[in-house]
Image 1 (cartoon, rainbow, N blue to C red):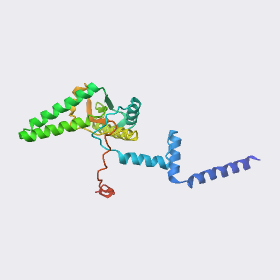
Image 2: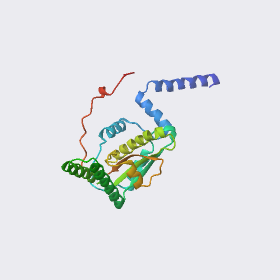
Image 3: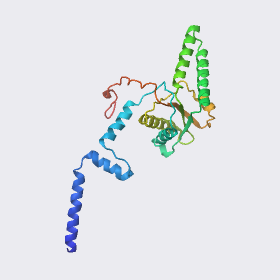
Image 4: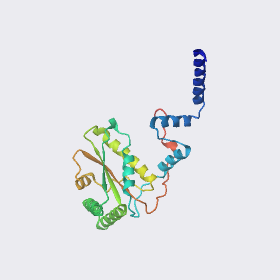
Length: 239
């Protein structure tokens, strides 16, 4: 085979390969691109649906069965949280993991004391005050049945205007990773005042509190609340 024939054959082969790619299913082609970039991702249809199902079935859980969460699961969940988007790749999040029973009890007492003081300061009628205090304490007892709590902070010393957004994105990753492993979570702030939480864990002054999230097996999975139709949220081009 002379050089010209060799080149012609090579060009034909390249053309066949290109045409093959042009006629490939777009989803599969996108999958192949991802595989070549990461070397690991395999977006087959089952996995795609599993991702969607995880997002749809995440729930805020407010009562847990108390079963321990293995350390490897905690690490995996937090590892997934750190892959969240972040402004300037600052990665400002800090995850304070509380699982020591004594520390969890201290946290619970702190929440109850704060709630009692908050309600008392409002000067409700005596009967109403008692009702609000006891109702809040009951909710605290329920949410504190989780064997693990993660207090999520962000370092606001760099890009403070974006740090809070970064923290919320990390929490969503955390929640979805926990759901994959069968655990319930929540985005709790009502009973977790920033000043008290920061003091409890000696948070540096430049650290901002995002939320507290439990991790644990639910007493039962909450039913999906009614969702508004997608059409209510979509705006094309402009309002």
